[in-house]
Length: 380
Ligand code: SF4
Image (cartoon, rainbow, N blue to C red; front, side, top):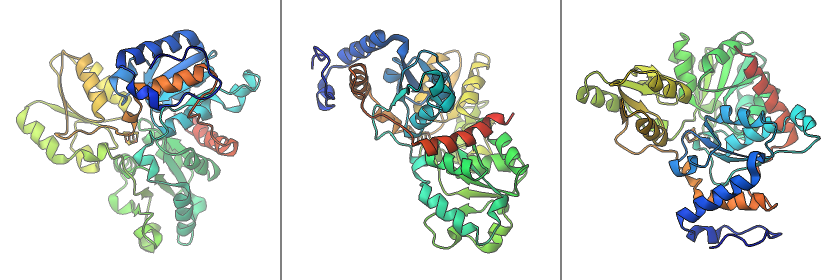
């Protein structure tokens, strides 16, 4: 399919892009980048596939990327090669009231190249389920003394819920400091959507598993808990997980240690507790990257996080021996939906004045999400 000869007034359909050869797609993507210059920012999440990352202006984790793009003075459009909640966060930050005012009310257009690029973890906690859980637990415990904490990997509506109820957002790098902040303001924390990050963080703070009941939204009575369990709780964990990090098992750790003496195990805290507890190092995506970067040549690692990131670390650090911790492929299948076809399609529509897949968060949700995000930023 040749590139559109002259800008059309209507949206270009996606279907013809499916048959365009890779080299042509790459050329056309780079053409749009050149034409739009610094008005356009393509953001590539660390878990994104290499052929997409090759066209990104910035590479990073979701919050870091959104913040960098939102702070740009020239950016008029963000194309987020990540998943839905990341594009929402970018929209919230790039179009927050003071930024809008500084641009005379002009919004930054935020595009997600494929709307089907969701996050299985974020999808495990819907706002109506969280609100129903909050109402149910209020029959047993004083929710005025419960601080809701949402992992940044969640829908904007959940961030807004936290904003409205004295709660806060956390990332995998600041989760412990955020929980500390929460305990200074309440007796308990309601943590969603990732039970593993909540549990792994709270365990390190000395909270025991019997103080961490799991709230299952599909159980009719109190999320499957007794009144006593809720009364004795310190952290109520939502029954959600990342389908990628959930796949790493303790036997993978044992197999690597048996086969590769001296190897170190490096995992993300979204991994289950049984893996996290026996790893040598556990930390956010940023920490994983830094740990490898700061290690001497000859270091041996088995890394438990998304496959594309591990493969990239392997390519960037040939002086070290890097393995993927699982024998099965653990990759973020939803993020993988963003491919060159979708990227080229969304970019050409954007350039020609009819953007597709625009993410625009409701103003009320934006307001309360910002309250929760700003509380996070206040945590040192
Ligand atoms: S890796 Fe897991 S938490 Fe991250 S976007 Fe994919 S499904 Fe969501």
